[in-house]
Length: 117
Image 1 (tube, rainbow, N blue to C red):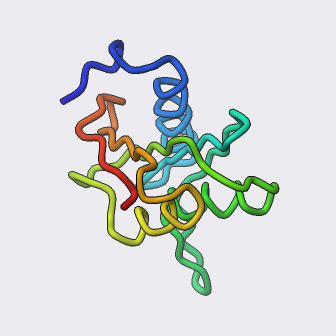
Image 2 (image 1 turned 180 degrees about the vertical axis):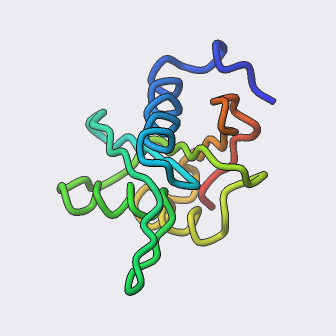
């Protein structure tokens, strides 16, 4: 586990935003990404009959749709132990293999940081 107070303030911010999205929308996951200019994009799980996206995939899609050309970091709040391969691939597509993905539990405690690669 990573002490959330030891995180860089900008990383702590995206974890907090991801946690808030999860709670506010009552979805299984919340996510946030930070682009190359410092802008953040926040999303929850999308579960429609015709469209299924994880929270992290949705946040990456929002960044792309808003004109982001790269990512500095990503965070997901989830019950899962780590970010899925599909989630890491979405982050990697925009941010590159070394982009950090912070994986936090529902309480906001970062369990692990993995790279998108």
